Length: 341
Image 1 (cartoon, rainbow, N blue to C red):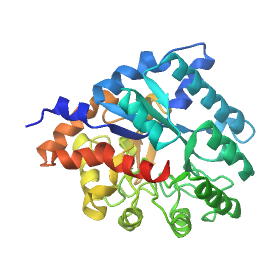
Image 2 (image 1 turned 45 degrees about the vertical axis):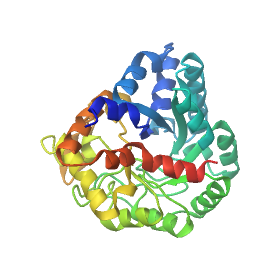
Image 3 (image 1 turned 180 degrees about the vertical axis):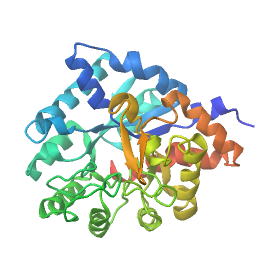
Image 4 (image 1 turned 135 degrees about the horizontal axis):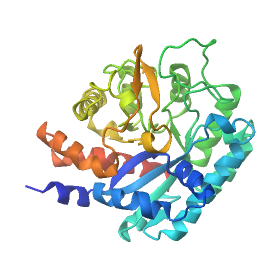
């Protein structure tokens, strides 16, 4: 039987969501260099991660005026780190992903996590496309000019809406450019709008199942079915606040339960990995209200180096090596191959 280590090294493992550029930008502004080499590379290798999607996320302190500046700063920080770290390569097409993997490098892709950097100008989208951005998450869990985000709990808010006229135009332009639409963080109304607009695979890069944890930030079974029907993929999120309603429930086993529920509803072709690993980068010590309970956010696997623990749990549950290969990389790579020629 194939060893766990051999399995991890054979599969081109894909993490479809990491706030890498955000972290690099913050640390390089403090005078740091070689952040990927010093803080990420070893964990990537221990986990067998070969493809990483870096989001462009702007936190609320820089909105609205500083959004474009920070997003460009994040791209610049990532470019500088890639020049310092030849083990990684920015990829703009599927052939470039194949070339990076063939050369033993880690492929890096770029995605919007919220389109605040565009302001109200859809004509800026092709500019970011030229910089390498290939995926568009319309919003984070807040309202912007394109859409309303899915909150983490049913807290008081004004009238919810789906995509704005600007959001509609933005999705249409993204599709015309060949940019993949990511529905993680969209509210239900916006999700429904995207599904009407796109006739190609749609992804949720880092979302879990609402049936196991009823937060608006997770996906309903109907939404899982809809994504699967497009040929899309859902990346399982390893942040505790999307896994369990308390620290005691946010366990490795419960994370595996979410994975099995997605497979049960949408099939094994619609599940991937999108761990987020937000604790270290975005929210050390932060908490969210989920299901009426305040839950401290922590990363269940810790870092990518903890991925073999999840593999052990799935093998214990009877998952085949073939299923793990699909979920850990094959499904997202299939979608990238369809989109990024």
